[in-house]
Length: 485
Image 1 (cartoon, helix red, strand yellow):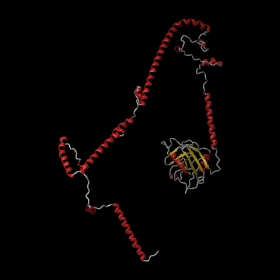
Image 2 (image 1 turned 180 degrees about the vertical axis):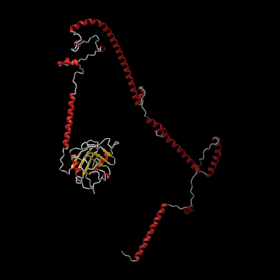
Image 3 (image 1 turned 30 degrees about the horizontal axis):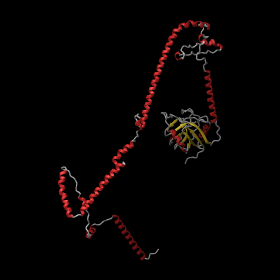
Image 4 (image 1 turned 135 degrees about the vertical axis):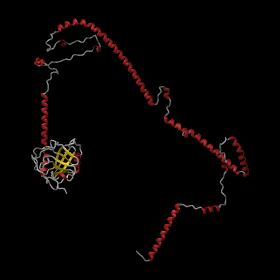
């Protein structure tokens, strides 16, 4: 019988919750250490760094390496081995150590099966209860590497204390305060990164910066760079119009000291001299532009015509497909107006000729059958009349028929061909002699009709009579012996 527990916590992991009961009376120092670290939030975010399939899973190390951990007491505490607490089944919690006695800190493990070899070496302080042990088994089935570390390690989200048997525990820091400190550290880190980013930002000098320009521009005026507009004369509606060049293009900037300063008046004087030289070039450009426009117009016309042709072809294809879908491939209107026959109707008409499904065919067939029956009836009646006539004359007629039929058949029929023309069967009659009582009695005497059902019923009746006789005989014997109830 297991010892009673005192204390309960719920370990919330990424694989599910694990409900744990503690043996606080038998192992007070281990349970106090575990509860105090849980109240401080020490286990929050800690991973399961070691998995041994079919043996145990281990956690409790902040560093995640298996070589860290600290106790609530500030130093490792001693083992608490109880003779009645043994690692006899799965779901048991024990304190992990570094291989030496009395070296417990914050790390603990949960067994996945019976582990008697751990008894006397590790402190057993709790057990998993309910179906939550299957979450532990799920962790034990995760993928691990060659060193026994999980490839995708699960972690402890938090530990919720349901029943605390130690009311005098005063944590050094609560889990809420620890989370607040963590948030404050993260906020400070973000602020430092933002400040560092602002300090390292470059000055906006319009993407171009020179040392001489920065020295000259000490007055604080910003240099503005303007883009030159792109002109396409071939796209203008009026090719003769000339785009006016703004004045600031002719004026040099303050940074170009080597170039002489040219005023607006000097620029006006230079323009008439250059205009005469540019006339020939403009005429050539105008001719080229007109040729380009004509070629462009011809291409557009050809493209429009080809596009119309393609559209017409597509429309014709669409009409053909639609006609094919409707079952009409011809374009003639007269052909469209003809009534359409369904394939099913044609097949029914084809089979009705041989099977008599058509009404007209059925009437014709019935008439032929009735005619054949009536002719056969007449033959029977004629043969009956012949039978009633004189036997002598009938015999003479039969003899004449037989004598005359033989040469006729021999002359008409082909050699080796047999024809059944015997119609004498029509004159046969079934006659029963009168006064055949002796024959009937003989048949009844010689032949016996046996009905199996009648024989079974008779046997049952005989069995019933036999039982009645036996009961009567038995009743008579008892009454003779004066037996009364």
